[in-house]
Length: 177
Image (cartoon, rainbow, N blue to C red):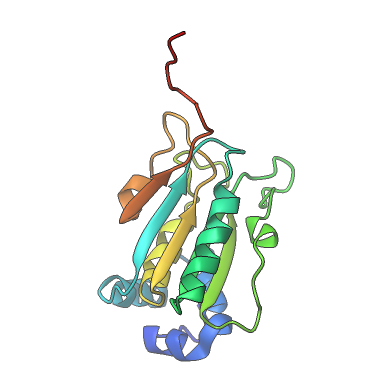
């Protein structure tokens, strides 16, 4: 991690510094400087982490976009980690949730990072965990959108302060006629 940033340097450097720090975390998660940054971030929590999960196609991205708009209208800073399914060909993010959320690139109080699940089970990518720790130290709200949920995609419950489980209307409700 060339020129590893401190937590204060990431705070001062805005979106560019945060993007670089997240890229460094993805490239060298065990580097001493990376661990030092994560340790500082872990001990300086600022924000509330909210996890959005539920079956694919239920509207998690639509809800995420609405929550982001609401929080920003209230003046709160928001970091988003959007975990997408991975392409079986290239391994990258398949859907690109960041592209589906309208965001002003000049808004220094909103940062959206898409991540490919990378074949990880659990609903989150391996790099989502350190990203959440770092973003929690920088933003009032950290919204984490998982790939989706089945019976084994429960990692979000271990990293979020609050979890929102999204379902289609009338899904799983028994109706008596």
